[in-house]
Image (cartoon, rainbow, N blue to C red; front, side, top):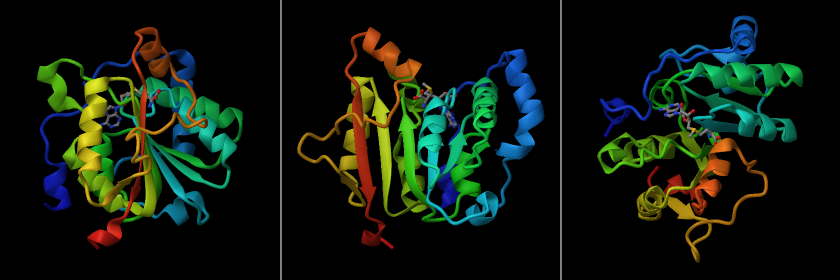
Length: 234
Ligand SMILES: C[S@@+](CC[C@H](N)C(=O)[O-])C[C@H]1O[C@@H](n2cnc3c(N)ncnc32)[C@H](O)[C@@H]1O
């Protein structure tokens, strides 16, 4: 399947909603978007030009409020970060965080990650990808909306660098089962915790409101870490 065919899916993993922005979020979008945001387009991004240096690029998909991206980027100035989110309030918040610490290693795209991966990201250019607490779409009839499915994984396998890492966390058991079945069954992905299948919670993953809510609901949390061995195919 080529990339355009992989992108072709009528069902999105999010619902467009009228996002209410606080004054501070709106001001951040007005004042800082041009500095830290990248508009969606069909042009491939040149990461060296974008960040003005050569460094590993970590993509955080569905960043919500952006707290994980911000925390990681602050603690790893040696990496570049690409935050992807469809809703504006979290982007406003992340822009304010970036400015408060004068970070220059985060860029943000406000668009569906499927389009971003298809159009803007060069092959084998991402050193790590984070997908933390993707919307669970718990009702069975909504499972088709889940972000992590074979199309997303096929795209990611092309965009992640050789030996790059894919980190996933969810607190929904049947989503965890689905992720594990999909990724463990893929020859190009190596589960880095093959004994127990899910991985220990990485100490660098901060607890966002989604994990806190899961724990409050007495959900278990599953972390997965896969290494990409795309030499199998390419
Ligand atoms: C449950 S939140 C998790 C936020 C964050 N990763 C965390 O751990 O706190 C999932 C986020 O993914 C975003 N999202 C869902 N589908 C997306 C897509 N196709 N492209 C980009 N963002 C998406 C949603 O808007 C939402 O903010």
